[in-house]
Image (tube, rainbow over the protein chains, first blue to last red):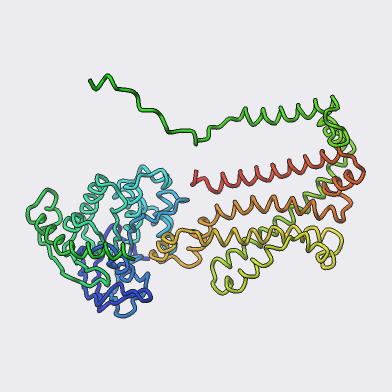
Length: 266
Length: 265
């Protein structure tokens, strides 16, 4: 068996072709066309209920679109155990398994040796600063630590594309900042491909190379905003980022208000 | 000026939080027994109505001395353990099948609901015809009685497993069997164990009922005999053995919960 190199992300392009989706009578997504290039982070923002999370589930094959297709361009690299890997908003850790056990869950169904899987676990835990907590149970960890475990678990399967569903939304604002820095660090060390769904425009302009703005339900692509400033250079207050954020908000404000009303009136 | 009118904010919280008070539980128990004993000795409580606790205790000692305790207890425990073990085992299996497969659910869950409501003791005559007057019918009564609540607890537990965890398992490409073994069964275990608590007490109730209908030995038979002889001291002794059996089972299940559900504590 080939020796696996640890800690390298692999590129794979994703293409969404004319995706339409509905739940019964309710249309959630309409005619979404989108390409995600290797090594790029695409953020998806939009008012609540616009189908952002649904879109992510469609991309990862957890749901089937009513029409249209999601294509993977190129073979996923052999070393990748799970090419499309999610990070969930509510962490989705097994409460009966330790930190270590939760990471190993993702490796157990693959034919890799015990030794190798231990090496992978050690590596991802050290990269997410969790080495001292390997025997802890999820209930003993803070929200930020739990999400670190989920990130470690995702890294362990060497994904080609990371699918992040509001990964920071369940955390308080300080933890959110810290974890955002960690994610950017991870990307700076080894760039990876990601689709990042959020309702937080600040996160979107910090983390996205491109930001896709969806309209309210049924979600359609309203605009794609490109940010050229490199990720490592977005730390402190930047006038241009501020401007992009303002622009995004102006795109979304009316939609968000309308979406809010829609929910209130059932 | 402000200070003149300053007064502390009155405390309004508290009052609905329980504090542990072991001494009180023991005290109630001791006072009750003492009251009962004194009442019997002074004739305040007629001996015909209720024997003194000391008399019941003597009856219990007699039972031990004549070696009859073990005979009754082993007969009862054997029935209970056989019936309960197989009842819950089949119950967990069928409950999992109902929880996991739509076809099994559609086929069996109405049936389970329909039979669950029947008091199994009403079926005992039928069980006697099917399984004979001996051990078979008694074990069958307990088995059927514990089977249905376990089925319902198990598939309820499977239904309540966090869907996001299952979706997580699918998103990491875990096999169907892995998801069942590593996510669904551990997730349903709290509900299954609390189902065990209920089925254990149902088991004891049915045990006594079945033994009262036709058994030479067994705690139920002992109580029935004591009752027909108006030997109320023996009756109380028998009932307290049942109570101890119930407590022991609850304690064992508590131990199992502590072990299997450590992660919840």
